[in-house]
Image (cartoon, rainbow, N blue to C red; front, top):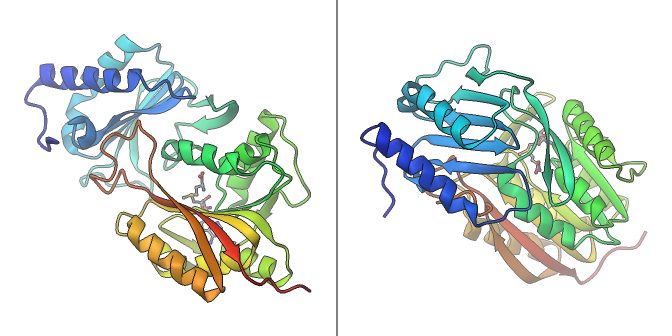
Length: 332
Ligand SMILES: C[S@@+](CC[C@H](N)C(=O)[O-])C[C@H]1O[C@@H](n2cnc3c(N)ncnc32)[C@H](O)[C@@H]1O
């Protein structure tokens, strides 16, 4: 049974923190960036701690943890050589300044560092307000998608800092197109490519609305073996709001139209109101609309360090890897 009450005293906090580290010790993850504490999954409701090598970030989703800053700092500095530590207040009481959450640096130093994952390096910045540059929960899915991309043409939509794209390149993808509306994130993606000396094609980094790119690709018969759809829950571009719940069914159908006769579609969402069954039913409808067949479905989620994944909306990921056969593809 998962406990959803706060620890009674400092000794209990300490014991639960120790248990969280012990739980992850045997995973031997292929990275130095991982979740160390995952809230209720570790019986520490509202407390998230992520490690990026020697840089650490604490998310206080409950005000309770703000009163335990000193204890958390002491625990982490006892167990690790901490170069940077920040606590970010994401509790209901937090009033973001200019849309930015409040944060308190507990161990100061440069907020940027480089982490490693499955043979690749990535720039991260823990001083960044919302995202650090690498979504840790997607680690095993990056590896899985990359394992299918050797010699293939890959379209990475909602690319962010191009971590999927970089993994596919490392695995020997023939062509990778990373599409994102943010030139800032694409620039970070380029930096990640440079850091790893990865090959870069002519259209490797495309600033474009993902749906528009997919539509145009299908229309021009610019087809892909692998398409990655990992959108945010909501976004805004050129005055229009993107909502994953509203757009995903249609976007999946459009993506299947941009696949080669035998292709792979990877879809994912962190929005807790979309479960895998929902994604799967959209996938069948999208396949049907394209006269296509889904020949294999892999149901995926967050990596193992996200203990108790799905128990709370802050730790949630529905993902599917779909192998798809299209019966007829128009030739132009
Ligand atoms: C949830 S993240 C994607 C995470 C990424 N797939 C990864 O694994 O690192 C959101 C990204 O989607 C981008 N984005 C939001 N709306 C978009 C749109 N309509 N078309 C393309 N990119 C979009 C944002 O700029 C941001 O980089």
